[in-house]
Image 1 (spheres, helix red, strand yellow):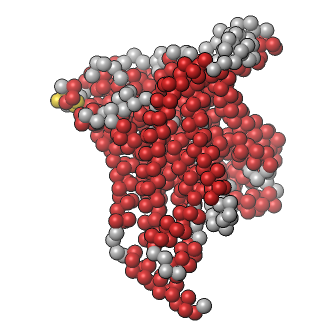
Image 2: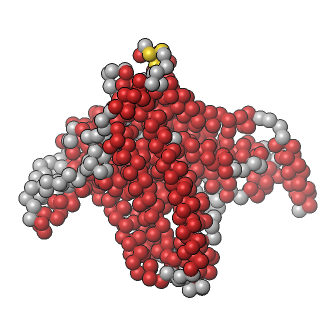
Length: 581
């Protein structure tokens, strides 16, 4: 064994000397940052210039404050601004509150494992499909009204404004149903780094109730880990477009939706107003983040006072534990029942109110829309496939460079990864469209792929980073001692062992790309049809059967890669159970 030990020691010295030698692999992190942040910076720059009247493509070559004045004179500005702020803050607070109640009351129990199985797959469902399903569920003529009609005596839909209500409550509820699974998954990842079980055992040994003990001992450490994902939820909820078009009010619409309307106006002067509104949207999100950060400090001070009082909080458990479980199940039910409603509508024949199910089922809707679905599916698959492949190549290169250099990701690097998700899409995508328009590339499919890459890269990095760093380095050391080169270790040892997380990450990336509405619409100039853009375009028409067909097709396009991500490793590992780590 001594020769082998000496060989391993010499390899470590050789590896250390190689780390100081620059290579092409060391350029990958810089290229990744350029691909991720370059479009954001360019888009912001070309948003600022038109906001101050400079748009040479529309014959505006002098700086002016007229776009800002036009925006301020718009009668719906105050209502649109209020909708963006209130729905964003309320959706984020409710989503975080539900996740905290679920974890505090049920983490580690059988009920929690059931809820986790229900909520986790819902992450893959596109936002537009979730919004359509939710609308079909709670609308006056929706499934819930039909099921309640025997008790209420309704023989026609009630005259209630539920979907697209002026206060944005339905929009908020739809966002909560979709963001709870995301924050729950982020919190579960954080719990593995906080020693939650030991903290809870100590708290319960000191006589604290389950929820009180979790909030006082575990929650501060968990929130420190999920602060950035919470900020992402806040920024997204304030500036979402596709969900707001489906569930939000239209007179006036939220500010993000109004920006898209102005960008699509034939009058090019409206683009200047849209740019000014985009700057306002970015300022609102920044102000909301500052307000949220200030509230964190206030809550921390109150929490310290609560902890110092020493109350054991046993009275909280009988009330908050059922509430947390019920709200979590309600979020899962809203998404799953909504998807079921989409599927039923896609096959529905004649379906009169208040019947709970259609009188007949047929394939006419699918037959009528199948050509358009196939065409949109091909475009969707091409864009998502290329964006996923590019993201995997770049992220694998970054992680391999990190592995060989021995330099791990710091807090500043994590902020850079989250930055494209923190900047509102409506703040920089209009500027990016203007830039591409001036370059004559506003309808190129490669531009749409690069726009998707901006949003796919962060999710790939966050999904694959932990499994990559958790890989046992001793496997690489043994392979190197047997004469394998660093690239051989990567291709013949590390990648095969990490096949399962790599495929799961690819499925996540594909789902993120499929769900992108605004980048496809603006960067593609409205001429790159995907399943998501076609589905949202149907929202104004009100054809529930057509919406159901496209919603189901969109969901199937996302679920397919996840099924492959589960099936392929099982096939590859069937005779190599010791291969995957």
